[in-house]
Image: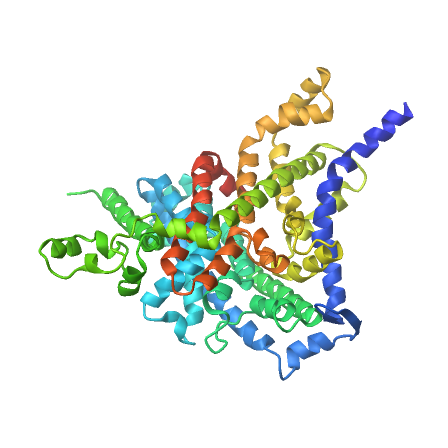
Length: 281
Length: 298
């Protein structure tokens, strides 16, 4: 029966259509619009008022009034602090957690920040950093303080991911290393780290992508201050698009530059990990 | 003497407890500050236990010396700030809004994702690989980059400052489809063949065979989506201007700027905003732990 057959051919598309329509509209179509807007002079209220070519990008990269490089510098510092902080806390915590009793209790407690709204965390740490000697009032300490909050909040989540990675390392590798006379540190260096390579890549990439977009804590705790010392790129984009400036075309160009920066960082990071790929298989 | 192994595990436990204190301290601080009176918060910003409950202050009061119990607001009840946050800050409305948004987004996203994931996992059709690649491509785009264009899309649909504008982009997600597809692929196809012989259509198979067998993946994804929806901040901040529609996150930020110095109230509101998710997490945790590792192991 041809009608029946037609229905059968169409079924998969009917299943996919609703989800695909949403993700395509707010993913693919959006990207197209963003690219288009970045080549326009686009006022938030008046709309697009003409093609300006690469002017928005030029303005962001070389303009006298541009805060792009300042914001990018702050963002990169924040990202580097976050990646270093997360790796320095999550992996050791995971290794400790495996040895300690009450593992599931610790897992739950360390996971709490991941299930707390960022706004709540920002409001609480606004005071905690105040108690610790006005960390948010000085241009030198405000950005590291924000990164500290980011690391504190992300440590538990990444610890759980590292725990899963550690569980997958076969026991016999450690036994073999011990037979060969490897000490604790050497076992860590030559068994744990190489075997965790995929998890390390995953955690680093996710931390890079996430921390490049930091916004909530900046918005709630510092509004980019003091003296613009915590103005990060996501905040600059927000201000330009939805703040007083209302320059969506310019902000879209900034967003694409942010995308490019994330891309470059992820690629560099992949290179770093690949070059160390000595022990694989 | 303790053996080396036991000593190591004791040491690990001690360090983990130390870490747990660091993790829990901000929460203790938040709860403690949320029951302080205004005066108590002004006098003792750093403390966790409000002065009027501190043993030393009680003792001094009992001895007839000047103490925190002589300050105005010494009869401040523990629930007072919570009641005030609801009364003056509309926190109850924001909570209800957040709950509605997160519930709708989770329900719709699970339905749409399940349908799409099932088609990608089990059906053969023209363009399957291409469509799946396109879907995965949307996962690579950072949300900060999508903020402006999504706003423009919502505006062209006339949905700015509406509930729909807030929830519509959350109705499906590539990550969820990917996760569910992986879960469905792990289910043996023989089971479906048996159901098909019994006269089940593909929706019937999905409902009676696939879904019951992928509960952990569904709970995990459901919780992740719910958490994401509950915690979203920048998107509703941009889309909404009518305070009646604010979710908790944006409402909290507004309440903080409205109340000025009355921080204990803001802390009370924060506690109310943090509790529902923690409760949901504890309930669903049994299923979740495997699920987190699932999302971590690509």
